[in-house]
Image (cartoon, rainbow, N blue to C red; front, side, top):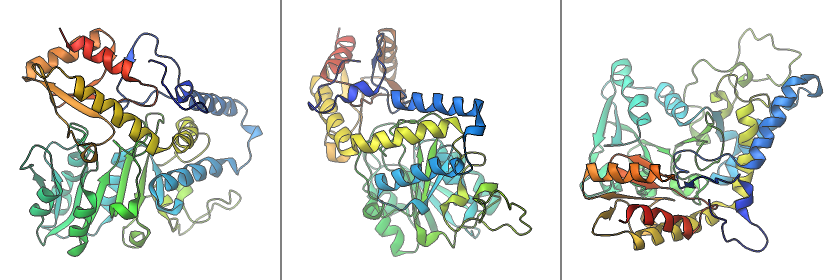
Amino acid sequence: MATTTTSPETDWRQEWFEFEDATYLNLAGQSPLPRVSVRAVEAALEAKKFPHHKTDATYFEVPDRIRECIAKLIGGKPAEIALTSGASAGVMAVAQGLNWQPGDEVVTAKGEFPLQYTGWKPMEEREGVKLKIVAPRGRFISADDLIGAMTPRTRVVSVSLVRYDDGSLLDAPRVAAACHKQGALLLLDVSQCCGAMPMNVHKLGADFLVCAGYKWLLSPFGTGFFWVNSKHLPSVRPGPFYWMAVQGSDNFSALNFDDPKPAPNAKRWDAPEWASYFNFNLAGMDTSVELVLRMGPERVAAHNRTLIDFMFERLPRDRCIPASPLDPAERGPYGCFCARSREKTTELYRRLRKENVIVSLREDNIRVSPHLYNTERDIDRLISVITP
């Protein structure tokens, strides 16, 4: 990584360890864990060696802090947030929690991230739900595509806010308005933008958000959250739930529940054995999301927009084609490009990996996802490798 140019007050590059042997442009694939988060995980490991130093309150302090930080990031409430092991857990909670009628529809998009299919496809056999997969009429999936596919039987539209394969940004408020006009619900996967773009759940109009933590939330793998609009809490049925998500479970001296009731908030969907200080991944997530707040999604978005625009300007157009919207208002915090054929794109990707320029190959596109530790020098390095 090159040393980033930041304000005199803060050099954000110092929050990470040096990649001395690589140019790392793959945060959408896997975030490097910040220094402060590594130290937090090490401290949690040490605490597990000597658990007598921790009080019962420790079990709740870390997860409560994380809920507060995520609520600030998305403009929601801590009580609306469940801590999960990834984005799939939230889709499963909605799929299993709604009351379905045979013939109900779930609308998603062609080429979506696989969790949209693994989460909803089994519901066809279980509940008689129909999964409708919508192909884009243009190059990128649009609000019009999704709205045009809705019918009176549509119960849920479930899609990514930012696509993992091309970086396109959905006009979610338009989709939400169409859903709510007919009583349908909108579920957004925000894994590829939460923490790297300003976000407000009420402006988005979503009913549910799901998110993996190991990308733009800078957290360990196996972390994430599920946000549910509080107005839906009474209507989404809980399945079997974590014992610490029982009403009154904060009183460890009286855990004999003959008739356990789920917590009245989104905590009822916390991942089992997860929401505790003694989960080492959660200890890392605690410090990571606090760092995300300190850096500010607005700063990350502006920084990445500059770098991706610079990349698109420098692409050798005789060999490469932008595969993301050129208008920054229509894409997420990264950009994609491809060569003139699938084979040539794969060849470029292999050349970049060989030269330790770390990017992702996703659905025949090369995805470039920088962060505050990257500079134009890193983009120059990428361009030099793909230019003969």
